[in-house]
Amino acid sequence: MTETYQEYAYSEYFRTALPAHWNIKKLSLIADQTRNGFVDGPFGSDLKSNEYQDSGVPLIQLNNIRDGQHVLRNMKFITQEKKQQLSRHIALPRDVVIAKMADPVARAAIVEKVYDEYVIVADCVKLSPDLSKIDLAFLVWAINSDAVRINAELASTGTTRIRINLAELKKLKIPYPSIIEQQQIANFLDHETAKIDTLIDKQQQLIKLLKEKRQAVISHAVTKGLNPDAPMKDSGVEWLGEVPEYWNTKRISLLYKESSVRAAKAEELAYPILSVSIHHGISDKELDEAELDRKVTRSDDKSLYKVVERNDLAYNMMRAWQGGFGASKLSGLISPAYVVCKPLTVINSKYFELVLRTPNAIAELKRYSRGITDFRLRLYWDEFKNIHIPVPPSDEVDAILEKIIEIESKYKKIEISAQQQIKLLTERRTALISAAVTGKIDVRNFKAGDTHVA
Image (cartoon, rainbow, N blue to C red; front, side):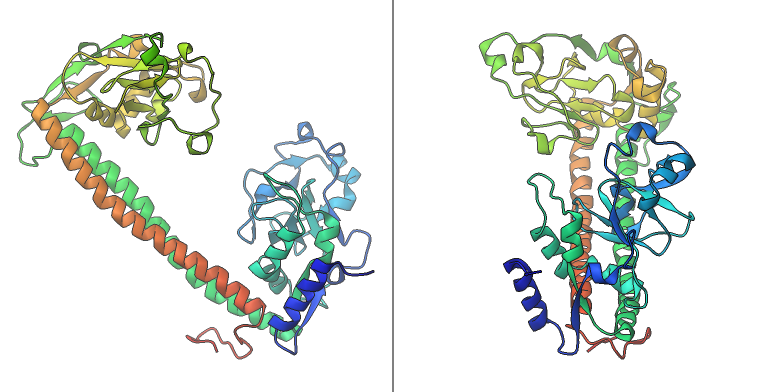
């Protein structure tokens, strides 16, 4: 069969980029030359989601192929009877599964040994490699390398989410050194990427600890104050415990009143539509869909929205128990599903937002919420207004908020540095894989104790 220009260019690239003693080979020639050696999942009409079970024969779905691994999470199953109908789509341990859809397209993993057999779904492909021709670990490293992924993307179709079909997958070419060199490359990458992965994991753990430490420091500041030597008293509020003896505790109804004002005036109808996030409070601008925490439906009729003014406190009734509170930094509009609380004092509502986001306060908010299950819980104003919260002097509130800005800046700088390290390590990992599977680095003499590779 005649090569397309793209296939020819790809072959020429490999011929010039690879070591002279290496070859290239199509994936179709690496698979077992049997009817079931290289197949994609069943048509949607052959396996419907309503046939999924909580136990039985496990499925391999797109979300089970991640970072070069067959990940056993969010598992779905089918019955033995259904498996018999789909026998051509069975994947066994030591087969390779490949994702037809991004992200990224053509990512691959070795099938895990946890179960004796699996069934692949429609957007997955099963390749049973001929292990006399290819080292299994090298094969997966090669498919997942940038050198192969880029060509897979070129052969894909689609706009918002690209897809590669089985025919194009079969034509994908991978570098093909000798079996011995394949094994050396796989050993090298197993060893070297494990070291990089350990460093990445340490940075991720650091970020997690920073977030926990930040929350603990902020929680202490807003509920205990900044002076560690301040005399304390029992607040009389179970979730709050002790507070500085000169602080007050008050019911929310003495600090706020509910507002249900809808946009009506021309000025109000021109306000931006704001969002209340469990992570960031009330947005300081109208967010587009890409910036939102989750998919929401917005109405073009702004008169349906509630008005919030600067220093109002607002919360999402359904997400209050997750910390869905915010103090508004500007005048705007929010969903009618939110409760708007107008302040009765001059105290900065940002302080009360931070109080209501503390873990102990969230547990109290959940206790006051009504609903059958967690995801049906709602916190209505009539319950919310009876919760007691701490009330320091207003000048101390300002000092606490200033200190928190300083704390957040400090932790943010460390987190950004850790994120940059993760980015650099990830780039190093990607480059190392591509360099190894295309022979840019010679690992034929690699030993696990080596610290330098030519």
